Each structure stands twice: as C-alpha cells, then as structure tokens.
Length: 436
Image (cartoon, rainbow, N blue to C red; front, side):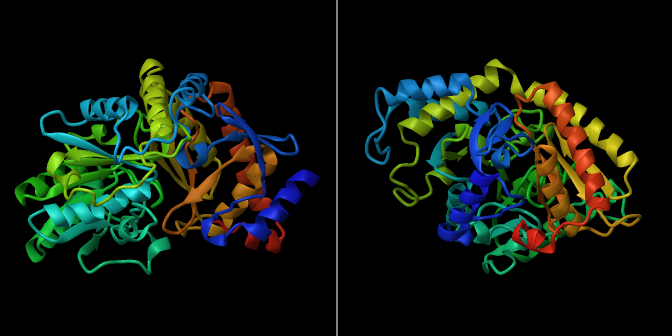
C-alpha cells in the first residue's frame, strides 16, 4: 500500500491534529453507495456513513444529477442578502414536515455545531429564564456555544454557568428497571426547574456520541410535559439521528411529543455541508442578523437538501432503515450470543450500538474497541466507536445499503471482534489510531 502510506505521511505533516479523530489507516479515493475504495484499490463496506452523513448512500445518482443542474445556473449567492428559490422551497418542505400547529421558521448553517450555537443563544434570549437544561453524554457540537450546552466526556473542560447538565437514562448500566430509571431522571429535571430559572431544555431523542443510548418509554414525553408545565422550550437534536436513520423521518416521532425546535445537519446535504434549525418563529427569529454565515444555505447546499429529501421520500428510506435495522440488530445479537465481550446491543433502525466490555464483566473496554476498528479495516469493514467510555461501536451504514453488503459487514465485524481478542497489535499503531 505504497500510495496510501504516502498520503498518510503527507497528511500527518500538513493537516492539523485539531481536525482529526482517526481509527485506522485508510486514504480514500472513491465512494459508491455503501462502499469506500482506497488509493491502493482496496475496498471497505462502510458502517459509518461518514459519521451518519450519507443516509442516501455515497453519490446517489439523483443527488448528483440535481447538483449538476444547479451548477449550471447559480453557485455563489449569499442568502443573507438575496433569497433564491431552492432554499425557500427547502425551508418550506422542512417546515411542513415539522409541527404544523405552531408558527414555524427555518434557519440554515453549514454544520450541526452552528445549529447548536444558534440554540445556545436563542433559548436563553427568548425564553422566560436564562438557564438551559442538557444531559450527560449529549453532543450538540464542537464550537463554543454548542459545546457549552453539551455534556460529553470529550468536552469535560467546556461549560457555562447558565447550563445545567443532568443524567440521561442508560438502561444497560443502571441497576434499576426502566420505569424507575425514567422516574429518577424526570425527578432530577423537575428539581432543576424548581431551583433554576429555566428557559428551555435540549436533548437527543437517542444519544449518538454518548453511546447510542435509547431512552426508556416515557422519558421524552415526560421531558416535554415538564417543559410545557414550566413554560420552557423543548428542543431536540437530530443532527445524527434524523432524516430516516432510526426508522422514522424524525427520530422524535418514536415518542408522542411535539418539539418547539429541531436541529438538523449531517445527512441533509448528502455530503454537501448544510444544517438547519426548524422551530417556533420567535425562537428561530430571536434577533435579526445575529447568527448568519455568508455561504450558509447557498444554491448548491440548498439543491443538495432538496435532492436528499426527494430520495428519502421516493425510496421510503425510513421504512427501509427500520427493516434493515432489524436485520442488523439480529445479526449482531447472534454475534453477542457467542461473545463474552459484547455487553449490549441497542439502537433504532440503522443506528445501532455495540457496547464492548472486559470478558465476563460489564466494565467498558476502550482498548478492545480500538483494536476492533483496526482489525475491521483489515477485514474490509469501516467502523468507528463512540460513548462516554469510548467503547461502543457505532453502526450507521447508509440507508441504501444492500442486504448482501449488510450481511457481509456483520460477518466481517464478527471476525474483527474475534481477532481483537486473540491477536496482539503493535502498541505504536494503537497509539496512532486512538480515536476518541
């Protein structure tokens, strides 16, 4: 792999470490649907979707066609000063998919972090209080405002005086029943409302980077009720879980709730950078010209967003994610039945988590997760890990993945887990690809 090593060496020499989380050596040459091809010609089945970006698969023909058509008409317009029809249409379609019972507007950016930044400003500026409730394990972005309302261990040194961070229910690691777990978590939220002047609450409908944690039934409904009772905004972050991935168009639709606002990003542009906040007009409008980026929502990302929605709807990708998600979880549960290092398998749709532990215990094993990713690359599979303990394999393949590739990926994952238990890797390699 001479070309790959050359690219990796040049990458190490010139690209900032501040923009890297690396899990295995690989240099990308091309992509197609759910596969990646390296510069040396070797291929990987992709269980990452570039961090859940490629819901429609890589280079979907309909998306590519619409992007080419847009390039023939306009590219460099700034919506700050001139509207253009594709962005207006995209906003209308997102608004119509959201809660239609409230006056709704849409804000656009380039990334989920920018969307999180908007809400970190807008919630306290618009709400009846100045405090935002968030949850441990949450990841709402890496910019200052978004990180301040997050609760992930990777951002332990970031915070704000007006943010209260509370436990998110983790069924696997709790000694209590799901009902008791929900009761305790909601009691903590209720006390926060009693002791703080709360403007709003933000949560993921299921945590992603926190470890693919699916909240027990009743948790999201309880949060929404508490927000209603206390005249506070209820906001959901679907930057990773939204747009069909969990088997519903919006992941919050698994619960009986109607959020005041929703964060979207990653898959909305099928690879072209775009994000959005869709929500109550007074929240999204909180202050004119206060959160704008020159190129956000430009003609190309707007066209990408429209094309993405077209594919999700015409191919009914949420239903496909639900069906293939069942297939994926069954396959991994079969691996777990024969493996003492798989502590838990959980998720919704094509957003599944595999918690790796020390054999015969519930103790999280970051080292094993790191080794599995390296071995998986050797077997022809791309997989990353997440979690507060950096030990949960995140399985988020494109929603367009074929059944044969899904099954082959599961088989390769099983081989990688087996190898990680029996083969010793070079410590320098592990240190170089330490991930989170």
